[in-house]
Length: 493
Image (cartoon, rainbow, N blue to C red; front, side):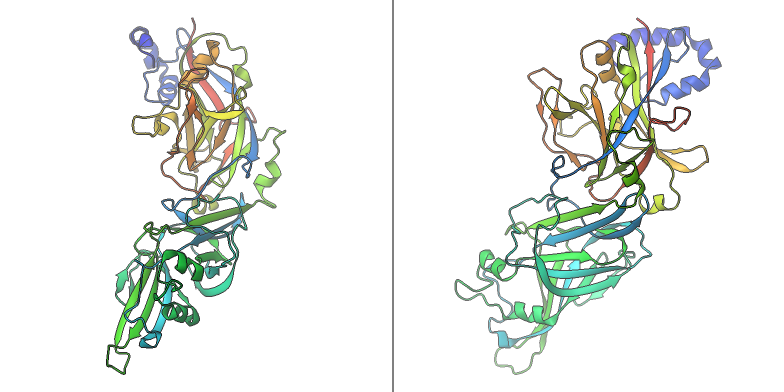
């Protein structure tokens, strides 16, 4: 709250102490709006009003979403085949694992001194989104040499069919749960592993490569990539996606083998060599996630020209909603103590626990003067450390109950300063956008000022793609207590 309102606010609180006691329900509702000091709603000096919302479902596509995957991001692989609200999700993972150094060699450079035991691709799982009681089948392929896959590129998450892969190296069917259980393998006893045995022919190939000469596979990173472009992992069945930490200690290619000591005739020494995802030699990665909404509730509601009673928000790559607040037009000047855009989840039964809500939502504004989206002026604020006030802005939900006692999530976005400048005639009325992005790159600042410009990547916490979706009540019907709405607590001037 502006300092110049603090003294009048305190006077209102003192003078209205009797009204406070007799109107506790209204007062509690007002102070629930946020941590700022808000006068009691007494309908004498302080009032409240609720403005209707118009909401429209829409979808991101390649023309309006440039989200790219980086190695530091949590990656997802798997297949969701039965989400009743949002349909099908297919998450594929592409990456490179490389020797620890070049020139690299196994214990002996002569191939006939090495004997393959097995070769295993190990992935480091971090979480599961979806139904863990349905089995998943992960297939591992080799990326074709003809593919454009590169180690120095960040690839779009939502652009399918970017990379060719054909050579099936291995497959594993499992239930995506119990990753915290300890796995016991040769020289490797740790939890959090998905182990996929690859075929012996591929393992023998790795042993046969040498590091001698300019064309030796282990002579340099360039030479190695000409022999092994990378791996592609996809799922052929299941109802969940698995989060993978590419940079984790348990993501590796394990080559188990025996070797002969000099002057020995028997393969008597067992060992293991690890290839890892490493930034030293620029290991490449891409996480490609595609959605199919055919036959879903979202598909039947998605029409940008018709106001929707229910709003469907899915994390990147996903959906968004356009929000209009026509009641702001002609709203006369007043002191805005609090203005909040309130929205509530519509309960969807047991599937809400499988396909849970996003960790955060985000509201921004379309500025027609620059034909771009911008952060909400005055209310979304950058911090000195490069983040933003996502918590006080309202990006994170609170737990609530609907009329039937079901546990739901509620969001309250603080638009107080924006609305104040609208009623003062200092800002136009923007169309708003509601989404669940993993990060934001857009115009930030106060329109018309020199400081107005594009912000750097600002991650929302928790940062994620792929997981999280929610169905919200739209702005209709007006008699629905869960309807999306803008509540304003104000004083007259």
